[in-house]
Amino acid sequence: MKIKKQILFFLLIGFTVSIYAQDTLNITKLKTVVATETVLYTGTMIGLHQLWYKNEPSTSFHYFNDNQQWLYMDKIGHSMTSYYVGKIGYNALRWSGVSEKKSIWYGGTLGLMFLTSVEVFDGFSKEWGFSGGDMAANVMGTGLFISQQLGWKEQRILLKYSFYPSSYTEKRPNLLGENFLQQSLKDYNGQTYWLSVNVASFLSNETRFPKWLNVAIGYGADGMLGGRNNLFISNNRYFDYSTIKRQKQFYFSLDVDLTRIKTNNQLLAGILNTFGFIKFPFPALMFEESGSFKLLPIQ
Image (cartoon, rainbow, N blue to C red; front, side, top):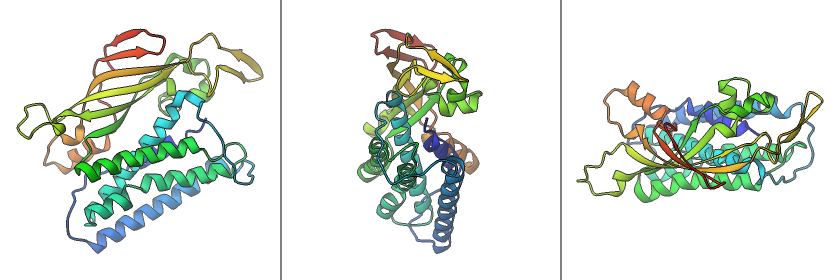
């Protein structure tokens, strides 16, 4: 299972801070941004190479079709990573005084650059390969950020993430995770990805609709003990969980846009901005591919 891009996302999201745009170019700040991004990019690529590729056999550049794996959950994870790394890149350039348009195009494509590099690594790895589906997802995430920033000069539709542990990790902990942190990265059964829409931003300035309250549409999947099926070998034993139904899940819920909560405290603003990618827990209506509806107390 390829979780490199999700780990990359959680590593980089930790560097998100609340920074305020300025319109005058500050060369010192710009040099700091460029140097920091260069160090992060170089360090991340070296780290990924050492962790995932160093001991794996290499081959000539080739493609790998993994579009049918994990019911597209991994693809949405790619989009989210590309979206938020681009958002970080844009904010950093605006903080240094780079113009709005240049910040959008140079900073907003940062996630696409990072993830394309990883895909190229995959393309030379015998175990994996360059995934066109992954690249398409990367482009979609970057496109979501750039198009909104160009059209509205703000992010009205956010990509968000939530996680609740599933029962499937007990059946295959080596693949789905042995503890909460591993499971939050590896277990797609427990993950949900959301399109969180800020309603007030589409209404008039006089609206009384809370500016921090969003409507969220989610996508998840269930019953997955492997990428394509539920048959696997572990510790020289064969396991057949094909009776477990693999199915897509769709959600409707409310959410809170933490970035729209106004505060003069820069530390608090930084915390709100850093954790803004996490969907705020609310009751949710879930529709499963099998046709059943469920009202969940929290999601």
